[in-house]
Length: 640
Image 1 (cartoon, one colour):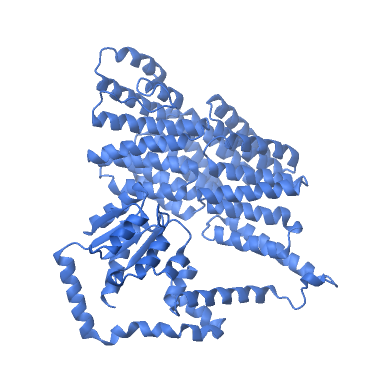
Image 2 (cartoon, one colour; image 1 turned 90 degrees about the vertical axis):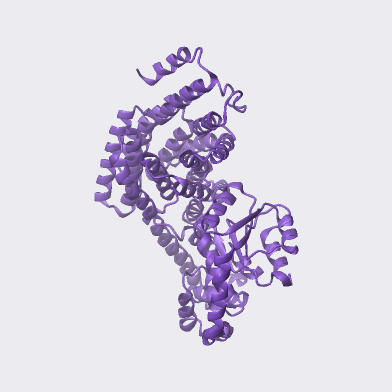
């Protein structure tokens, strides 16, 4: 019996059954329909408990396990529906429902269900473009997942790879897919196998075109063929349409435009048939870029404009940023420079807001490529520097090539200005050297970092983003010897090395403290999910954690007499932000020795060091290092 027939039979089958049993049957069928991409039918299967998708589910007369099961399934379907039909606020609704299911599953101590729900929550964040938050949820899901469920672990690893691929961290994506490979091979789930081959092929596609790697291209085509086979076996038409979209993108990247249009035509037809407006708009964006490569700017702009109009209605901001960039490029090539610049600036803003930093960087590079002749040299240098910072961690070869091309454009502009016989008096280029200009800027930034770090090369290196302070020392000793005097204070901090007896006694006293009672940590964080993950990690390391969700409430605790060994603090807090709280704490004599770890998603590392933080961790990647960092600051604190 096919799934549509099962849905019809469900209505008869549920007659006379208790409400809890009806809920169980509905969830089971909805999950099967979800796996094959039939989200409207899945909604219909749940309609008894969720009659209006704009209203909260009806969970009357159900016990906790059945409520949680329904909330998870309804939340997952709400996320997919919000994505396909571009419902405004659809992902936010889905996140709220799934979060409610997680709270119940955690109370029931159903770790496997918690893991599954966090995986679905990560998808909602991914669709919004909140990639860092999606990573946090997937790490937590993998951490709590018990051994034995290989299929669920494979799903989570594939989703983690999707996020890394989307942000062009291709090596990290391949690592996740390599971990998933043996799990997928043992599985009998065609939907899981199809997803694995599809996403693996997508990474190979990313790597193939920029380097003209025919072997990667051939392997990507093989992966897509395997994906199509498994999706066909699973009956997932929506996934088959996505394969066609990616084949279209692959052929566009290697310049086979007629093949690209053929696959894009099939993909768009399927997506519209399946009422997936968002991905149909993504097809339009790919087609517009293909037309731009063929020199058809007017038609490309019209199609890109339509894609932007559709994507603006929903919550998929990362896709919107890409479509805005495409439309901006098309308008620039049509000579509408003012409108093009406005759209590219908006693309940067949308991408940065969602956390898609590389997408913002690519939009800035497009500004240089398309509008460089209209911008001043200062504006070009500013945009280029900003783009470099945004795409610094990219593993996409195409991005590296574009950086080189844009740098060459900058040098061309500089040479043209230097060649002008009589430059305008308000902006003369006499004696200008771009190399010296960049070196002077580098010296100025290093000098400021050393000043803010009180002469400590180690702290200054952290402020500048170096992985090891030796890199900064090499720069000072090599290109910037005039800064040697500014680091004179660094040696004064290691006097304890020549006093081994005192160090030994303090180490022993510290060990007695560790062995007697758990050390106490005050964690100030208003985001419940982050607080839960951090708390679990610290408690697993045998620390006692007290949570505070408000800056002013945390200040009241710090001014009191309760003992805390470490302060772990976010920046964005209600009442009083983290930086203000750190500065205030540094003035409290009874808290002088208590180390501070700032754990924040904001780009405030330099401000955190200046305020007095002992360590700075960036969300989400820093979350998994929190226990080790606490141990490190405690060890450093006992030696001072």
